[in-house]
Length: 505
Ligand SMILES: C[S@@+](CC[C@H](N)C(=O)[O-])C[C@H]1O[C@@H](n2cnc3c(N)ncnc32)[C@H](O)[C@@H]1O
Image 1 (cartoon, protein in one colour):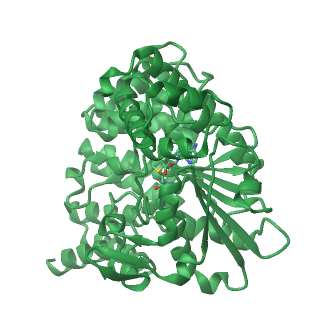
Image 2 (cartoon, protein in one colour):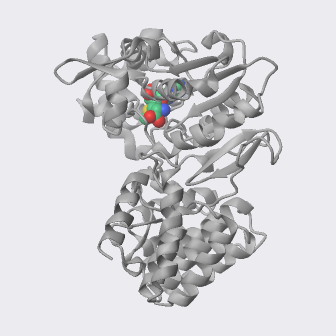
C-alpha cells in the first residue's frame, strides 16, 4: 500500500535513492517514489524494511538498483528530439570538429550519457550517415549509456514504435527503418552497428573503464538527465563529465539545463535557441561560423501581416526542470533557477509572472551576481514578456538595454523591430530590420519581414526585392530546415508562402 510507507522511511528512501542513482525525490515527488518502492518490493517479494536495509549497504545488490532505477527513472525520448540541436550539430559542431580536429588522428568520439532507449545516439548515427561524404576517412565511435538496464536492452534491439518516430520526417523513416509488424519499425542494421551501449551510473567514478573506451570524448550529450538530480549530484556528475571531454570538446545539455552547468573548465557558447559548453578557454576559431547569438524570438508567420504576429517562444524548446517549491521561496535561490522559472512561465503564456521574476533577478544592478550571459538572456526574455502583455515601452527599454550589451547582435535588432511593429511604428521597424540585415545579410526572416513591411508601405519594388532575396537564401537550405525566428516554419513552407503571396499580387 502506497500510503502505508511512513514519512521517516520515505525520507530515508529518498536519501538512499539519491546516493545510489543521483535521482532527486523531494516531498512533492514522494507519491512517485512510494509507487516505485511498492513495485520493487512486489517484484522482489520483500517488504520495505528489508529493501531499505539492502539499500543502506555501500554496495546494494545490482538487481535491486536495476529494478529501482527501472521503476523511478523517466525514460521519455524520441528520434531527433529537439531538431534545433541536430541542426546545430550538423551545421556547426561537426564541421568545427572536422576543420579543427581535437586529436592527432582523424577520430571522433561521441557519448550520449543517459540515452534511455537509444533514440538519441541512433539519431546521431543517422545524422553521421547522412553527412558521410564529409566524414569519410574518419573513425567515428558513438557510445550510448544509461543507468537503466531494461532501457538499454530495448536500445540494443533497435525496434521502435510510431511514438518514438513522432518527430522523424517520412523520408528518414523510409530510408532507415523497416516496418516489421503492427506499429513496429526496425532500425537499419548498419545504423545499429554504429552505436555501442553500456550500463553506467553517472554518479559512479571511472567512466572510461565502464564505457570500455580509452579516449576522451569530442562531444558528450547529457540531455534531459541532469534535471532529475539535485544540485550536489548534478555538480558531481558534471565534474565527471567534464573530466571525460577532450580539450575543446563539447558538453551538450538539454534546453532547460544549460543554466546548471557551472564549471570553470567550460566556456558557454551561444547558438540559435541554445547554449552549449566547450571545454577550454574562450576562442574564436573552432567553429566554421562562430555564433555569438541570443535566444531567438520565434514569430508566428502563419499570418502574412507582421503586425499581427505575436512575439512568442515555443514551449517545446523549454522543458521544466523539477523544482522543489520550497526552494523557490528561499532567499538563497541561485538566479538561474529563477530564470528557468521565468522561462517556463513565459512558455506557458504567464507573461506577468515571467516579468515579475525577471525584474527580480535583474534588480541586482549591473554588477549583480548574474553572469554577463544570463544577464543579457534575462533582459531579452523580459523584453519579450513585456511585449506580450502590451507594455511596449518597457519592452523597448529592455531590448535596448540588451542591445547596449550586444551591439552587433542582429537578432536583437530583429526583436526590436517586432516591438516597433507591435507599436505600429513601421518606419522604426524597417530601420531596425535594415540594421539586422546589415549585420547578418543572410538573415532570412529579416528579409521576409522587411519585404512585407515595404509592401504595406506601398513600396512594391523594394518589397519584391526583399522577398526575392529571402527566396534566394531559402533555396540554399534543405526543404526541411527549420528557420530561426519562425516558430518552426520550414524553408519549403516559407518558399510556398512567398510564392503564393507574389502569385496573388
Ligand atoms: C528523459 S531520459 C533522456 C533521454 C535522452 N537523453 C533524451 O534527451 O531524449 C533520462 C534518462 O536518464 C537516465 N538516468 C537517470 N539517472 C541516471 C544516472 N544516475 N546515471 C545514468 N543515467 C541516468 C534515465 O534512466 C533516463 O533513461
